[in-house]
Amino acid sequence: MTDLLKIGVLVSGNGSNLQAIIDRIEAGALPAQIVCVISNKADVFALERAKHHGIPTHVLDHRSHAGREAYDTALVELLRSHGVGLVVLAGFMRIVTPVLLGAFPHAVMNIHPALLPAFPGLHAQQQALQYGVKVSGCTVHFVDEGTDTGPIIIQAVVPVLDDDTEETLSARIQKEEHRIYPEAVSLFAAGRLAVDGRRVVIAPTA
Image (cartoon, rainbow, N blue to C red; front, side):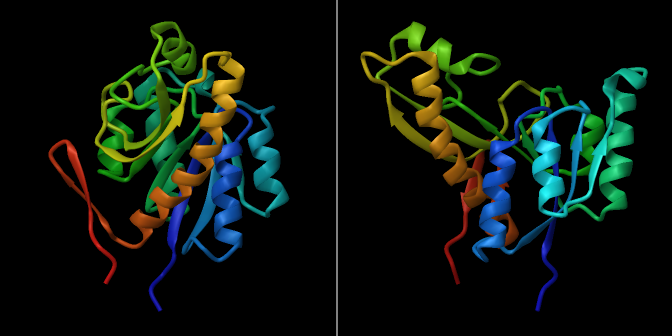
């Protein structure tokens, strides 16, 4: 039996995508183990979710470090101390640097509530509504040095309705986030993801 993939999850807020991954693991559908949850903020519900499931938690306050590189150096040390093989960003509101990306090449994932490359950055659902698109969705991607510019792993599409608000569209997109983020992690755990330039190639099942 191969060793389970060890995941480190970085959070800054509610942690609903963290919960989706935990649920998939506990259901036996995702062969992985979350070995640590790290937040840059102390009072976030994501930490309570982790504690409820017996997952080690850490608060690493970005304000106590000299800069982004110094902060990521501390992050890398903490992640490596847990033997992490995949870093999952789940509402982590920090720009990561080459320090973290170089320590975990093609092993840092993020999810974004839009169909990238459309509407990167903050308030993606609001951007989509203002632009008048007919479909939106979410994207799981590997993280690179840009803002939501890394190679795309999986996307899911949702319709944009005429009477949508930012809240209703966000809720519809979030349901798809909770479905495809664990799926992307599962593909990584199975060794089925390969990065070829900007493309992520998904190998067929054996």
